[in-house]
Structure formats: C-alpha cells, structure tokens
Amino acid sequence: MRPKLEWQSKLVLLAVLPVAGADLVLQGHWYATTVPQVTVTALGLAVLLALITRWRHAATPGGSFAGAAITASLIFSTSMPPYQPWRNAILPVFAVAALAQLATRMGSARKERMGLAESRKGRTAAQIAANLGVAMLASTPQMQSFLLQTEWFTRATTAPMPLFAVGLAALAEAAADTVSSEIGQAFGGRPRMLTTLRVAEPGQDGAISMAGTLAGMAAAVFVAALGAWSVQGNVLLFAVAAAAGIFGLFFDSLLGATLEQRGGLNNDAVNFLSTAAAAGCALVLLALLPR
Image (cartoon, rainbow, N blue to C red):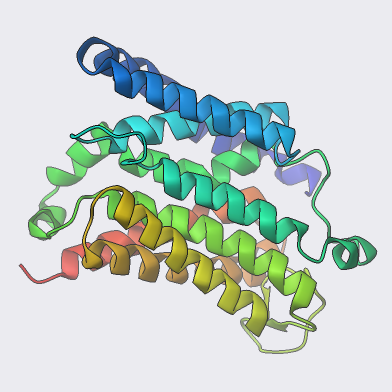
C-alpha cells in the first residue's frame, strides 16, 4: 500500500466502525430487552467467526475484532421472526469469509513465487471494513428508514423483497472481487487490462482474466443465492443482488485500471467504493422494478 494513501484506509475505518459500535449498543440493547436469544445468537456467532478467522490466520487481531462488530450488526439488522440462528446475514457473511480463505489458499505456491501472496498475518481491520462495511451500513435500521422516506425510492418499497438486497449486493461484490483476484492470479495466466484489453502482468491493478472473472461471477451468484434463502427472500431478491454484485466486480476493475493505477486510490478505498457501487446498482434495479 502506498504510504501517502494510508489516510484512505483510516477514513474507511472511521466511516464503518463507529456506526457498527453504535448499532451494537442500540440494537443489542433493544433485542436484549425484547428477544434475548437474538442478542445471544448475534454476539455468539460473531465471536465464533472472529475466532475461526484468527485460528486460520485469515485476519489480524484488529481485523477479527472489526469483523465481529460488523457481523453482529448485520445479524441484528437482518433478524426477523420467527427468529432462527441462520435466518439472517450470518450465512452470506460466513460464505464471503470462507470463499476468500479458500481462494487465497488455492495456487498459493505460484502466487508466492510471483510475489502476489496475501500477508500471512491476515486481513487488517481496514481491509475487513472495506469489504463488509457497506453491507452493514446499508442494512442498519436508520439507513432503511431513510430509504423508505426518500421520494426517489418510493417505487422500490412496493417491490416484493426486503431491502436486504442492497446490503446483499455489497456482500456478493466483496466475495466476487476476492475470488476473481485470487483465482485469476493462480490460474488465469496472462490477464488483460479492462480498459484497453492489452496483456498485463498478473496482479496488476485493473487486469482481468477469463478464469478469474468467471470464478468471481460464480462467487457473487452463490453469496446472493445463500443470502436470499437466509432471509426467506424471493427470486427477485437473488437476481438483484447477484446482478448488482457482478456489476460491482467490473466497477472494481475499472477503478483499479484508472484511479488506483495512477495513485489516486489505494486498495481499501477501491474495495469500499466497489461494494458501494454494487449497493447503488441494487437500489437502481429495485427502483426500476414494476409496481
């Protein structure tokens, strides 16, 4: 990461972690006094996921803490009666983490020879916030209440699906981005730049390969399908989240080929903006759905 751009990673943390902390206090207290099992489930599953990521060296201690806070907030925001441990965002979040871990391990020897392997210390708090933060922000009760009061979004309120499609699209993009990058570096051969289609070096910002792109799209579809099932959504919820997640994947490569390569953005900022683009695409698709 370019030292002069570290402020962007700190800005991502500042945008995500205070909201996650406040949401934990507010929603945690509300559920503790009304449906205590949701509080126990949310905190327990979040801590369990954090412990697993530390055990697998998939995240630093700070990254595990950030992931636990974001995960618990997502579980609170997406829990609905009848309350069951898996009927919320935990499964798609777990899928994002598992797919990232699996894709990172695949072809690790080749990636190490090319100097492209992930740090053995795991992902940092900023990296976790950049990948999961938009999904959490979009799913909070405050954001959903704001959207429902926005005139532009009025048509989307009549769509036969919960607003979790917005947050789920961000999760689908996060999975797609990591899987496409890791699989592309391991098995994609010589990639091409998205903007010029010229042959590029593996790992170059904005470079894509057929293998990596297809793997990323498959990851987005899988996370969207799992998330739609988890919240008992319909086919439209799945379709919106999957399509928006794939859109975010290509938006990520576009940012990488332009602003990141020119030194205007670091990877954390690119990931955060790409998940935001996926969420924004989901909003547009929701608004365009027929009444």
